[in-house]
Length: 315
Image (cartoon, rainbow, N blue to C red; front, side):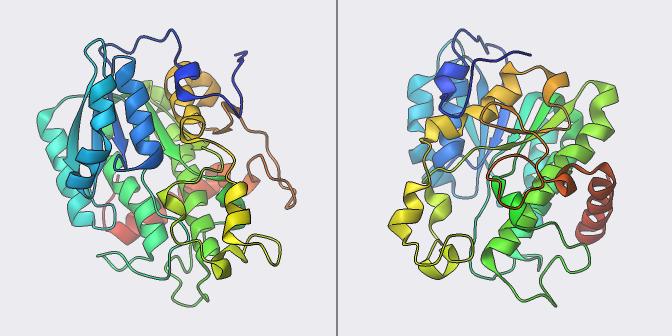
């Protein structure tokens, strides 16, 4: 597929002329940033969005713009989801399954980045538990409702670290914020690869996307000490912020492009960035592309098995 879109394309540019009337979409993390913009763009083009968030009051305020700009039958409803609690995840999935209403696309947008060491309600390291395991259980539980596509928000951060299947919760490994983030983002890519392989025969594809560097609430834990893990020595928070070069509408563009504009065959089982499928790139100095370990089908299946073991549920 030939595309005219790139790093600076916005959600509205990507969806120009696209009518999403009758489409139903689940977007997680609609209380701020990319989640709100993704929901806004989809509803403005006619989609009905189910927005999931931990804090429904905050999400309600943040998504007023979604309701204001909804057109052609598009709209928004909210559902409670705390990805750091499998009890909440399962309750959310049960509620969605009881309605029996299908989703054309599910966008796993929510996440945390480079937070201090902590554990989820179930005892998992916070970033791996929230970014990966919470979505792993949610998406697998509602898989029968997905008609077309699953979009997993990963990150260039996957290049910081592969998953560690022997020590996923940093019980033996010294904790570093961006190492943990990298593990969780690699897991997001591998989950999409494995999900695609399991569901493509039924016409459902999965893809992982890197939105780009964007200044959102996701970066609230970026202290100078944390920044030093990935930036040149002496980089200040202000200087680091300058590297967050994309606007929020530009950052959300790859999500909507991969979910609604690109062909399923083009993006299925792949990792996308800047509104195109990324090239394999194992050069540690490169700032684009996808590491081979993140799209390795065998590695994806190993993570799937480990994830089932951790959450105590088989899919």
